[in-house]
Length: 554
Ligand SMILES: Cc1ncc(COP(=O)(O)O)c(C=O)c1O
Image 1: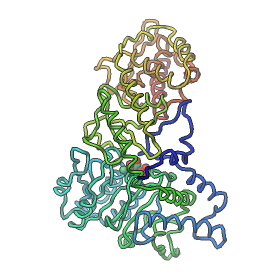
Image 2: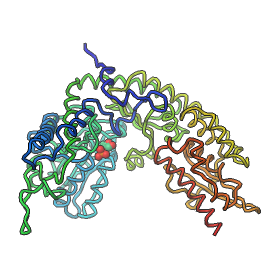
Image 3: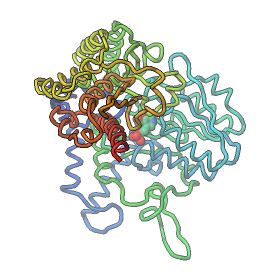
């Protein structure tokens, strides 16, 4: 039996040959976006070097070349998903825009007050918010289907929600958190029984399984190129021709018209009616190369290989104390979401990042799902065929270390009692090598911070702009020197709070305002390594202290 040659596959991805903070990069955030192979990068670049012109409109050769690449990519997509006609393939900038297009063009003109739109609890925000906006404008209602224990859409619940008022059923083929294939064949058949349209969000499915939209017989299917090794800013909306023909344009301008006059405008034929303005020609050409790339590999072999990685990952996680998978059983694609009891998911993700391992933590753009599962958030590991068994094993080893290392907290606030705490920290950080060591120091500092009394953790002390919950309160002594106390639900933020408090504690308002905090962060080597949201969180803490000092010095 031939097996999947992951090394040859991986070799084609230049970014994966790089190091991150002097360590090999382990990229386990593929459900967010995938890396791009050389073939796709080359096509992107060569488009600009050899074929750059606007499509469709000009009579010169360069435009003909650009148009050919652009339209060839459309035919490749048509064949890739087995659509009946090329007119059924509409270019968008991603899955999100595809859903917005349907919501506006179909939803606004077809929905009446009290009509019903059915979604599930596991939808990505992209398949919730457009419907909420359309429901607000039309008076339609949203109904939500529950999930079974394994995280699949519950057909009994769907049947119970169906009625003669159901006009739309819009669900994910695979949830970006639960990794389960939903029974979309049944969903599509049930939609037909009440005359509703079926919309399938294939953003996660498209990279992991073969698709035949004619066999599925759904009304709409949509996805983004960037989750299947293609460029960002390119998406596909597949829709049945009869439906698309009867829909009004989504955006308007050039390209989507036949004739324009102040006495009236007529619209272009499909698919151009939905493609106003100059499209992402380079991205779409490169998406054509992406489809060639995928078709150059055996999809069943890739899926088998992903299955092997997934079972190693699950058996490794099973041995780590406190790990709880958020749904029962084995996901259908290598997307695994879990929590670790006693640990904030951002702490775990930040610690893994310090070892060069990229995973995702938070709500994964599925806040209603988190609410449904009664979770603040979770950690998500999502794999692709360029990942390896060695990476999975290394990840499990590091995660074990991280979890074991955080269990010996002994909070004391001892550093913060010290008048020279900021100098102590500068010396400490100057002696660390690399971001991983610095990150460990931050986590250790987090442990030093005593929990703030519950009654002080309130609306007033809350620091807005922080990625995790964080609170700050202040006291002034007779010499008008401040002492700040702070807390957060994430250890990494607690560590950052210690760093900020070390700079500002035991200072008067004037001294606080005069202190050069950016120089201090620079000397600690902090800002450039913090994620934008966490970096902003650090600055939000500083802003809150400066506001207190400014108020006092007026
Ligand atoms: C299931 C699902 N739907 C929709 C989206 C939105 O995709 P995009 O941001 O590419 O528009 C995502 C992205 O993570 C997703 O996972």
